Length: 512
Ligand code: HEM
Ligand SMILES: *[C@@H]1O[C@H](CO)[C@@H](O)[C@H](O)[C@H]1NC(C)=O
Ligand SMILES: *[C@@H]1O[C@H](CO)[C@@H](O)[C@H](O)[C@H]1NC(C)=O
Image (tube, helix red, strand yellow):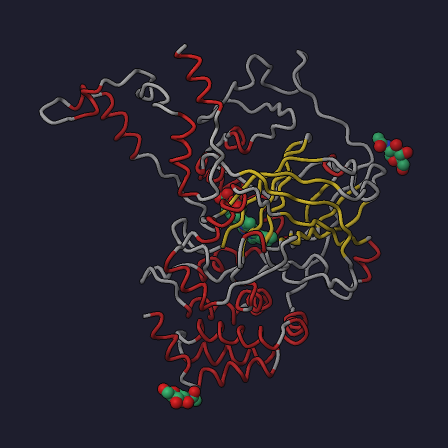
């Protein structure tokens, strides 16, 4: 009788309220009473006497106290040194258009095919506890759990990157982060780097423009930036750039509004995504490709592999391929999002990756970062497991998790005892070799300012540049004006005027 009542109660599952603040009340509704006995991590039930007080007792004999204190000391792992703060969710990708003529990757094999995905959206520079409304480019990372292993598209909400030579990655990143002496973000560092490596001005025009602060995660576009080489069954290869366009439209938040909201809720964007999904209002994106042949690559009047450049849409139009939908929140942030380990080197048969140097550097860097953050078996952590495939490696042991450690399977290759064997990839191709010249993208930066920004956006762009540049020293301001004038005389002179006017006084005060 008691059992029956309990069953009856437990099937009246209260629908999860869309307000994240209702998570705990909803859990209570669902469970009715304590869900079980509390134990130590060793599984031994904890007596009330051990949790209620430790006064006048011997600590070494209180297993609960030792277990909990020694564990909390080890709770933190290194945060990602870039993209530390992120919103994320699970969902699926559905093929809407056949592209088997250019790419044999199984995730594109049939129209209507659905592949499970996880996506994470992250400003680059704020720390895990920073504001998600910080003016910055946003990471736009999507993992496709395919039957041939995981394919990660680790992109941005801008169609270009800041540098084309990975040699500058470390110091570029430093220049965007905190000054080591003051521990503050420092516009001298930013403007010094940007004016020394002016190819980065292309992305900075976008970031200081409207793209720098999204209205909501569901309004973020996504770009893979790298031009990837893909191959079909016959071994013919093509070059593609991925575009994810939000079905809710690209929308932005203006700086003033973001400053106000940030002060009240620094998790505004993360909360919004969580709430949208909890109430069933699922964000979705239309996925398409720019597709180039080898002839197109040779005939282009610039290097189409240059990540500081965009591929103009009028020359290389978008070909729709599918839809991405996010319809499930994580149950536990640390387990399912903090431990996510995206990597551009997670490629699947049919997708060869980028031929450029930034891509080559990234193939090393993410794996390194994840060994450091998560340990050698990071691919055995549940969110990283290629669960749609059948992973079978000759790797063994290492720090946990090791899962079943490949049980009794032979651990050396080649072997004569039926251990796993490699497959034959017929009709394959290698990444083409490219020669990369020094960057120069003033043309595209000029086009962005002159032709693609509305008069209103230009106004906001100049305001946002002034907000940052106002606190830089005089010689860097002068260098910035020279650089901005080279991009467009109007841009340079308006920034110069702005610095001369007293509007920047307000910005200096705001930052104090
Ligand atoms: C030399 C160039 C680059 C290097 C060395 C580099 C390195 C890294 C590293 C080490 C991480 C942290 C990964 C982790 O701890 O899990 C990271 C995160 C990230 N990077 Fe890069 N990166 C580079 C360029 C790029 C470019 C060009 C893009 C976009 C196309 C990009 C997008 C991202 C994103 C989205 C994340 C966050 C992934 C997540 O959500 O966990 N990075 N990067
Ligand atoms: C290789 O390509 C040829 C056409 O060029 C095709 O007939 C053949 O089936 C392909 N082989 C495989 C294993 O896909
Ligand atoms: C400077 O500020 C004063 C008010 O504080 C205003 O009257 C004046 O127009 C401003 N000058 C410029 C050049 O913006």
